[in-house]
Each structure stands twice: as structure tokens, then as C-alpha cells.
Image (cartoon, rainbow, N blue to C red; front, side, top):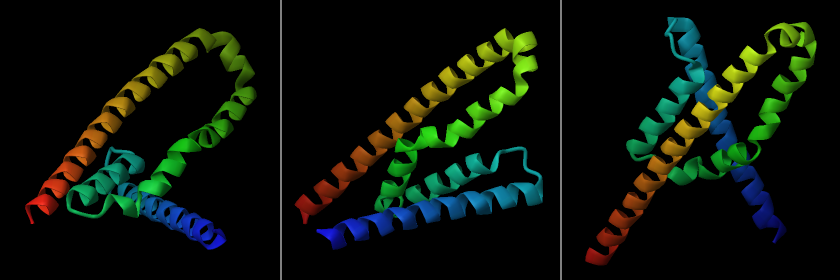
Length: 136
């Protein structure tokens, strides 16, 4: 049982490493070329293109699920940094809150649509594989 958990741990760690490497490479490329796109967005596009090109989803799925499950950890530093700007929040707080809430709602909606689309694509791919196996 322990070897299975250890193997699973290192698999997730390796998959996170793959995703981080893609992000770092895309961020480097954006900085080098001056593209007006965040490196993370380009990296997401690269991962999407790789998956469409036939790279197996299980190469990154567990690592991506872990990152999504622990996403709150990545937002804590931003919330703590807000304490530094108390005067700004007193003078412009309502505007910042409106932007934060609208931005969060927009990101959540777009993320939901993208995830839904990916699940539909994954389901279609599984059905196609099942049909291919049953036809053989």
C-alpha cells in the first residue's frame, strides 16, 4: 500500500513539474518576444494544443487536479498584501471591491465554461475509444 501512495505522490509531483515547466517556458517566451499575452495564458494554450495533438491526458491530469484543489493557497499572499494598502482601501475601497467581485465572477464563469467544454471533449474521446475497441 505504501509503494502505491509513494508512486502516486511522485506521479503528481512530476505532473506538477511538467505544468510548471510549460508555464516557465511560456513566460520566458512572452518576456523574450514582448507578446501582449500573460505567460500563463500562453502556457494554457500550449497544454491545450498538446492534448489536442494526442498527448495523453493522464500525463498531467492528477497534477492539475491537485493544483486546482489547492488553489486557495496561491491566493493567500495576495490577500495578506492588502493589509499594506489600508489607506488605498479607505479612499478607493468600493471601486476596488466592485472590480474584484466582477473580475472574480467573470473568471469563475469563464473557468466553468472552459472546464465544462474540456469534460465534454474528454467524454467524446472516451466514447470514440470505446467504439473503436468494440469495433475491433
